[in-house]
Amino acid sequence: MATTSTENIAIVYSHGGGPEVLKLTRRAVPEPGPGEVLVRVHVSGVNPTDWKTRAGGGQSGAPGAECVPNQDGAGVIDAVGAGVDPGREGQRVWVWEAAWQRTEGTAQQYLVIPARQAVPLPEGASFDLGASLGIPALTAHRALTLAADGPSRLAPGALAGRRVLVAGGAGAVGNAAIQLARWAGAQVAATVSGEQKAQLARAAGAAHVVNYRDADAAAQIRAVFPGGAQLIVQVAPAANAALDVAVAAPGATVAFYANEGGDRLELGVRDLMFANLAWHGLLVYTVTAEQKDGAVADVSAAVAAGALRVGADGGLPLHRFPLERAGEAHAAVEGGAVGKVLIDLP
Image 1 (cartoon, one colour):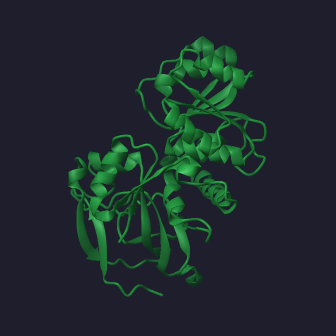
Image 2: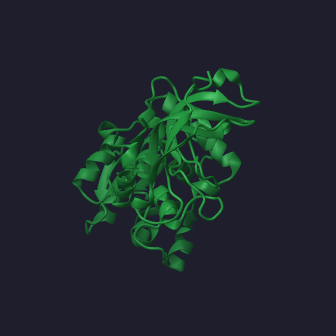
Image 3: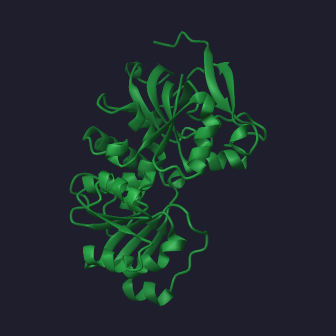
């Protein structure tokens, strides 16, 4: 079922800068090599690392190399390379880390990618959901599974009864963390900065939501979790360190995946020692292959079970842009758009 198209409409950039460096172009349709598949991309998802990579000059490749942005996407396998099951042609898939250490991201009609990174997407799951998984869901999975006393994989019951606090519950990673934690049986609370975001965190499935700006935020969280939070998924470790210490259970783990609110983390040594607290940083791109494969499998299982949702009803409003307005899509993410920014391919 190899494509009959000879044109691949794409967004590219060849040097760092603002959204204006993104240009619409037409390229040849690539051919998959051994172990690769050609994906006809329907929807491309935009993450903070996408605009940060663009601003910094690009993905791996020679200086000045033409780069296509965006790590995540969803579409249909159009052709397969040698060594790949021909039966995968026509398969609906979600794509992860397309542009990691590569110059070919998902902001193009046709994408060649290793077959492992094109994951079957169930018929009941939309391309919008598929393009919203990738970085957010895999990051959330790692945050929920890195504690020394917790599970290394997620499934129903894996976090049964565990008290999980998700900071930034209205963000893409926070949303995925809430939904995955609920699917795995955890008790979930979230912190947000206002009522609009509180509604989104509740829609995602957080049973309790607290405004972290409230003077009594720690008391509110302790009222929900009298024994303290056993696992904290943290987007702003520097800004929220004091609150985390105040609400953490003895032996708790704080899993942080971003540096919102500052890049310098100050912690009281005795506070951590006496409560046996662990602060654990993570970057989804550099976790082990075994951890990545496990996360992909578990996220896929959650999708198949209907446990992951997008859109306002799932606590993650969608903001859509056509491919020719990819710069605006990047600017929306950089500007802190609440929800998920998606680019529709022509």
